Image (tube, rainbow, N blue to C red; front, side, top):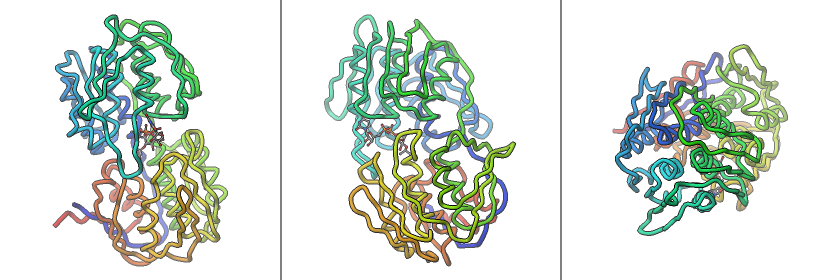
Length: 423
Ligand code: EPZ
């Protein structure tokens, strides 16, 4: 397993290009199953998760080609050859569950392995199943798989009400509803930019959708969807991550492709911490007002609140802040695994259940640390940028799931960072 060595090297200067959103692309790709015509996705991120979704779709009979060094995905599911998503693939990437809705809508049946838990939590899929049952699907859970079947005449539109916000469940039922007979109204829908991006792509394919980005989405089922070309929205989590680089070690960095509307709540917290964010013609320019950021309290919430996917990265910044910060993680039950690793670097963090109290220190010290999940990994990289000496982050395969060429992007703005291939 590769490692990455980061050495604190002072302020950063230059530009970092932000890629297309992993979490949008992982929902957009299964949308190809809804149509017999080709779907082309541009601005696709070059990530291992995208390659895993490619393998899954190919196992169902879809054709997926990565063009232009992986930045364009040409997908086509003219003739599906199967409807079973094997455990071996699903266990690697939970987003595999997003083929369930499209397969039910297109093929009338699906067998999808239950994803199982992951490092940050149990991650059940009950909301996905209940929502699809509201469209008439029958779900039978056995031998670790969801065996799903649509009614003989196909899915039928209906009311869907989520007890709490779920991004994936909203995406699954949104895709299924596009081909269900009649009207579907999704209440307490997720409002993330990735949902909006999926709805826009589906509309380009001929779907009749209104309300995306609000908590109520209405879908009028149509008989079929046609092909389309769609540009994947900018990755707001990669954006927020790289905005924190100049925040944590000084300098000025322009994140190309960044948009304020994607990171509103996050920018409010940066401002309170003493970080300037300026919109430019090419993206967002970020610098800190003084050598020490201020402590701020953070609570993670569904969009438009502070994103849980930026909590670990923000904690790294607050480890060096002037004062004490309280971070409350309200989305996942176990998303502080970066804390013990940051403490190996000298951070002062007290975790009590879903709350972490961080007391800022003057400077972190480099140390060997262990990546445990995708966002925790990059949190350790950020801490290493500001730390004294070398930080070796092990198990960086977690990182490669969600960040393309992280050492290239950070080296280009002056960071001292290198990847060490597994011995
Ligand atoms: C998506 O996961 C993202 N993944 C996650 O990003 C992100 O953290 C999460 O949304 C929240 O924003 C992708 O888009 C591929 P949820 P998802 O359903 O859809 C519980 C990253 O780092 N829940 O909104 O799985 C769930 O356990 C990843 O890029 C149920 O209980 O998240 C969680 O506590 C990590 N039953 C909460 O709801 C269900 O059926 C929110 O989960 C579904 C979810």
